[in-house]
Amino acid sequence: MVQRGKTLPHLNRDSIIDAALEIADTDGLDALSMRRLAARLQCNPMSLYEYVANKQDLLDLMADQAMEALPDLDASGDWREQMRRFFNAFHELFVAHPAIAHVMVTRPLVGPVTLKRAEPALTVLVGAGMSDADAVALFIALASYTIGASLYALARHDTTERDTRLGELVAGHPTLTRVAPHLQAAAGSEQFAYGLEQLLGGSTRA
Figure (cartoon, rainbow, N blue to C red):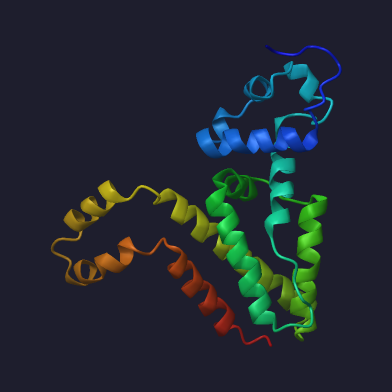
């Protein structure tokens, strides 16, 4: 039964964000609405607006809160190792919560948690001897790669039919036929780690 009173002990910003993320991860962002969210939380839809302004505000809050999963960084540690930890965790976050990856593609994030995570990451890069401009450029390159690779992995989550079709399509193309097994495996965590290592190892900035 939907509660319509003002006193809803179970209702707060965190519970709203958690429920919204569950809906979005299970059924996609298009399935997330204030009405659907209210039904999940057993409250009147209008009660939600005491905590979030609208759906767009909710999306920003979801993405920002998810950044809590990223690790604390050690500014005195090796910068490549710190970036490995940070962006591997970023990738794992996106794969676990596809909605967050899609929100980050379409909306700039400037929430308090996002800023709290970005500050030490850039501090690590600047502390490694990079200029401010180079630190930002490398951070954006790593973030862009992580988001793109994560979305690619999500798109290939169910690959049986696609892999069968790939085998048929590459017939007559000898190089593609030879490398097809590698293409089919190119969305896994090992592939992501390999690409990340190439970006980090290829950097000449420090």
